[in-house]
Image (cartoon, rainbow over all chains, first blue to last red; front, side):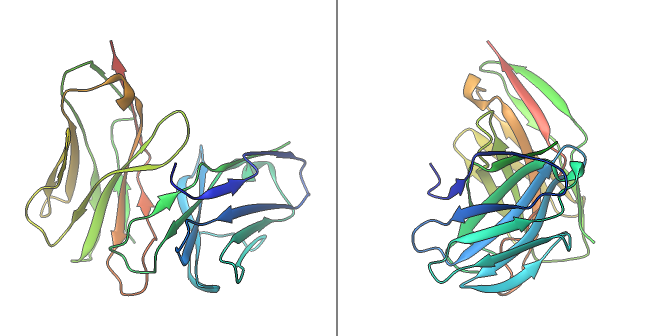
Length: 114
Length: 117
């Protein structure tokens, strides 16, 4: 168990809908990262938050947004969902924001868009 | 832009034998980190081993070791005495060394390893 909690584990929804994925980092970790794992794109970095502020952006669509709350949990919001958004969404956390820190991954949220 | 390539989509090995997974990468950076992650059927991403580019010595973690060839931009993973629990998807990953910008991993496409009894 990495200590990173993601909910829900599975999510099934329809095209055009909006969903929210939740991530609770390990106790004491200030950074949260979101990754998307899909069959065609592989594993891609989406976005990073550090202590409530956005720190880095990757290949995140404009229909997607994220935030990190004062209690350090993070939410990834996906809107106007398309079939191609079906993927496994990972959250990871680390103590700070340095490149030599270890990332701890959650078990992911499997999103199926029908 | 950095890219990571794993040319072996699938591999298999007999239990107790040794297997090597290949990874090449492309970057103009001089300072970076390389990683191997394991993703078993449980989907959890587990860090197997990490290599700092400035270190010439190859990293080792128990049965796992790497062959890091910086000039050739090659980073292979050797698993010795393979165990059934090593069955998983293995991802090679790259991270630039940037102050205050940790966590942005660039992953390869993965190699699915099956350990057979």
